[in-house]
Length: 564
Image (spheres, helix red, strand yellow):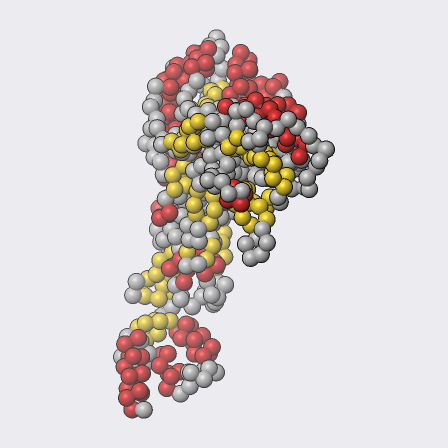
């Protein structure tokens, strides 16, 4: 692993054909975007001393150790009984251990191998069992089929070439160089204050956990935790996050949008028309774009990002608002399945929002699924779209703000306006609906809502809803003791309506039977009385005290105890 550098607009793009006005405008735009500075992210450091764990069939493991033993400290772990026929010219420093591996965790420089142990332990650290001073391995070569770890993006320092001879040779050649100090960027920021994962012991949003291909995100109850050493910058967690609690910072969204706004501004100012922004990743996508550079249509502007999954609606929609004709995402086989699935879901949300305004529903889409000829043909056949005045709004690091500003700009010039549009289930925008007959205005939903989309009526028994703040996390539905809440994904275009609170339910207040102070609702008191009337603790006067406010109830209890 080598240090990863911050993505910048590639200078090679300036060598793209510039035969037409569009080509010349593209060259000017890419040069201007390259000058826009981005904030650096912090770094995550690894340290490896070369302690290698080799797991797999004994013969293969020993053969690998023979090639590596002069440069790495090798330990071979074999689950099967000793194979006396598996001979190899191993040095005395190579340990061969026959144990059952039950757990393997960690990353470059910090791998922990847990092997089975008799109850009550169940498992023990292999290096501790071998009575070494070390507790962790630095590297792992997994020669088992299938590999022990199954996540889509494997930890740095873990090699699992399976039965592929080329992959085995590559691993054996690379492993000796994995000794020393290494760095990679920290790809994310996390703000627990706006996280919708959980509250009061209940679980709400799990989208970042579900989509992470490196299993770097875990639940911590009401918050989540992201392991920066396991995170490999796929970015789908930030794309999926409905609130912006996880943000991608390689580079930050505000910096990316500043580059894109400048790029499109200069492109149009230089005489370019119908610009198509083509996002591609920094590896396979970049190589493909470079290979096709000479034949790439001159209105297509390639934009490099670290990972394709790191860009979502908070970039796509503003890019359209800034004047892009279309936004295309160059797919490659390297995109993990979970990231591809999340990108597809986000595309359905974005294009539904566009269609609700009368725009074509495919102005943001994946491209590149076919061969190079199919891709070039698709890029060249640019369909006609309605033109509109490009936006100039400022860029922010706040996800929902960027989306809101973009949609408001597009809506102001929309070819076919409507008040709202239904979105697919799972979209991070929408309303909640309350069954007024079932709701008792207990306010459990208000107390648990992480974005304050729900609020009470202060002195009135009233439930209010602020649609602009709802992220459809479902915590209110889970918390409701009466099952009175349902979610409805949609996008409400009118910004005034979206920000104006509306009453979902209200009742006349129930007044204390002693002092006449309002303190609850009639339905709540009726339900509590019905549920408790058969309980031995709530007979006679005790049941009547339910109808009193807190102060009067305490006085009545004190008086009853004193008289008794």
